Image 1 (cartoon, rainbow, N blue to C red):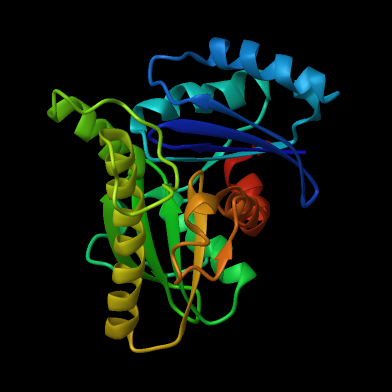
Image 2: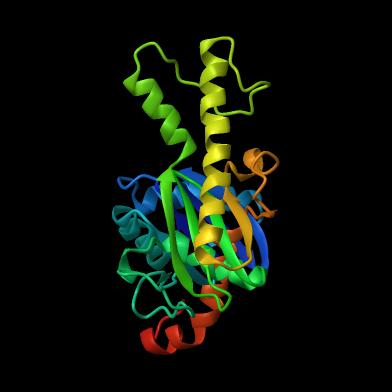
Amino acid sequence: MLLAIDAGNTNTLFAIFDGDTVRAQWRAETSASRTADEYLVWLTQLMALQGLKPSNIEGAIIATVVPQALFPLRQLCEKYFCSHPMVVGDSAVDLGITLNVDRPSAVGADRVVNTVAAHAAFKGALIVIDFGTATTFDVVAENGDYDGGVIAPGVNLSLEALNLAAAKLPRIAVERPQAVIGKDTVPAMQSGVYWGYVSLIDGLVKRIKNEYEKPMTVVATGGLASLFRHSALCIDHVDQDLTIRGLKILYDLNVANFTSNTGKRV
């Protein structure tokens, strides 16, 4: 079995693959101060509920956009799961694609993994929208290469900014309002954030397509993708497991060479 870890700015996802099937997955708040021991206590309890033990894990792969979180996650894999983990972004890990940008090393691991997974699942040129701490739009070429993208503030980040910067505006949850014109503060805020993001999504996708000058399929992922899928007319598919599947694809691509180069089980 494979332990795949995706550490984002807000949450860290742990998934266990049994072959190509996701056997179980869990989320924890991303914290650079959490130790490998703390991860172990939390994770093994959840694994036990699924009838799983650390000894079932035969390999591990990590993608993170939080550099401070990498050390305890790597230590977790090596100390308790007896696996030397692959880390997306390390020179030893073959991505199987080319990053056609000015600074390839600056591309977030999550965006790389999404590109790999989207190309494997869909044909032609693609736009991958990831609703995370930031809302990202990534352009995937027909051959799978990464051709750049757009980064916008995430939905919840925008809500937090409104609450912090405006004394009379409360903290609210994002949801689809009944009308565009709000009759009170909360529905007015919800409308501004929700319909504002719908316009941002459709508007940016239209501009990307015009600039790219090729037919493109739009794939959305991330926690809020399902909330916007029916309002943002540009979204063709929603795939909540895109990132974690990309980790499995990269693991399979590299496992033979990685084992021979490190001399350790991955």
